Figure 1 (cartoon, rainbow, N blue to C red):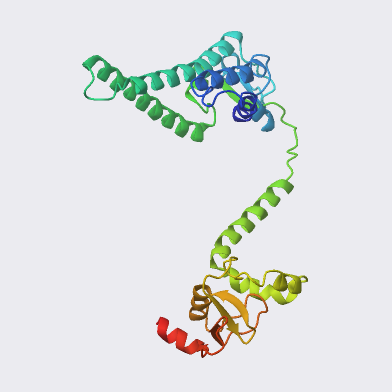
Figure 2 (cartoon, rainbow, N blue to C red):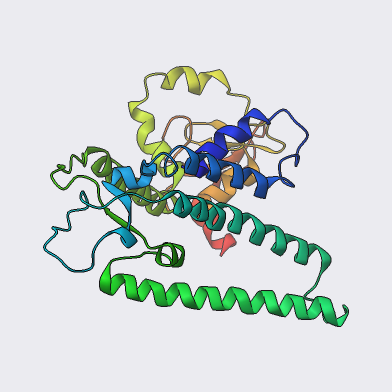
Length: 293
């Protein structure tokens, strides 16, 4: 949700100077996160992602540990005002301050060994704090996978647990879009695999007899080479159809293919001859392949 809102907000400033929002990107992210918190958690409503999963926050401090209460998620109260404020300060404010400290330390080059000792020690302290937080998050993830109570360290400290909002809610999820997306993904991967293996000239020759405007295309640009689409510098004729080509275009195609078909009429080329010199003996394709090898 934050990424979608950020994309729409960036479009508003698309006509501004390039790089204008880059220096205020942490503030923009914090503002969007604050808006999501203000209109969801602060008013006792789930976030858009939690609403899709039928989840809400519950204050575990107000739920008795023992007793016969059925843990359906409906009997417990929501978060208190202090929990909501601390949640905003830790998630929105904490992420903003950490991103600003990291960008400031990187800009000041605290990590360089040539800097003074105080800046170097501050950089090492930041790295250790980040490492400890990642290790604690990993341990909390293992505990969450085992117990399923608190998914983050902030939720564990605030005793804010995600529970079902409605135990009788049906899962009305349509898999039509998902199936369509899977089909298109597989089709695109198949095209990416097969297209580099196809020979475009062979496909074009195969589809040429089925073309409706074959006669108009073949007679429209007789003066141009059908391979490079330019005027031949050294014009040669393909025999027996006598269509004009560039010498190098026609010779390389005839030497590469065992039976080259004319790009204009799809006829098999058996020899080539220089244009305008009827006295010159045509060159056989077998001699051309032997000379190229």
